[in-house]
Length: 269
Ligand code: PEP
Image 1 (spheres, protein in one colour):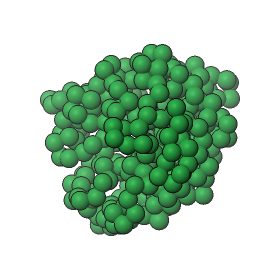
Image 2 (cartoon, helix red, strand yellow):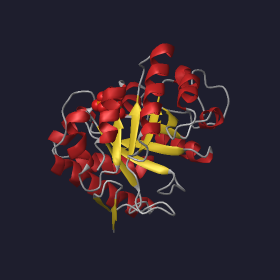
Image 3 (cartoon, helix red, strand yellow):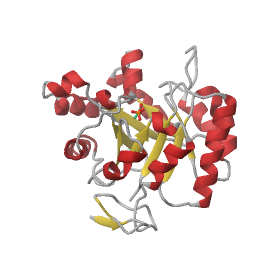
Image 4 (spheres, helix red, strand yellow):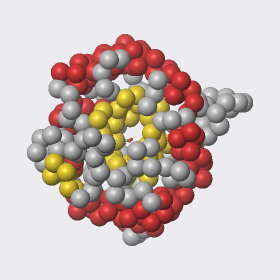
């Protein structure tokens, strides 16, 4: 099924939200472990001004480090920008030093939480089973879970992309998720922060595979928002965001300046 975006482009395979004629793309910024109180206020505030002045190009989310959350929430107040955590624990509370619960993210005013980012899977040994438990905690807290999947370069080079990504989809998606509460981000690990990206055909093929797999395993297919992530910048955003089945982007490095992140938002068809 195809819908016409606010800019007149035809977007296929995306269900509109109730009362709307299209589903906007989601552009989510993952700041990772970057920024300071001062820079986060300037970045989030500058972005909020842009989004308020030119609304409706895309749904926009930013995921700052935890200690900057309050400043960012204050800076974007009154704008439609959603704020998200970069991770959460699967328990609601308890003896988990250094962790943050999805319930607390919700309490502070977040709308999203990223789970299963490849840096967490690699640096903290997170398994798909744990990612699934985290995603279920995100849903229980009433937030939208952005579940990340993606293959390493060695896995791609040995033809294992679909096997690996399929396994991550089967293992990481939360039970009880819906296209409104779960977003999947396809992030080839070798494309993150490297300036390299798959070809547009490769992105389209993996997105089609993920959508079919999410439908088969979780009944999350047609209306699912499926983001691409990995070295998206203003210079390549328009062509990536125009690929069939790409419903937005998860952006790391290029979400750290207003100019670059806004350039990506403006590239939405
Ligand atoms: C990410 O880490 O989610 C990401 C996509 O990073 P970058 O845009 O810097 O490749």
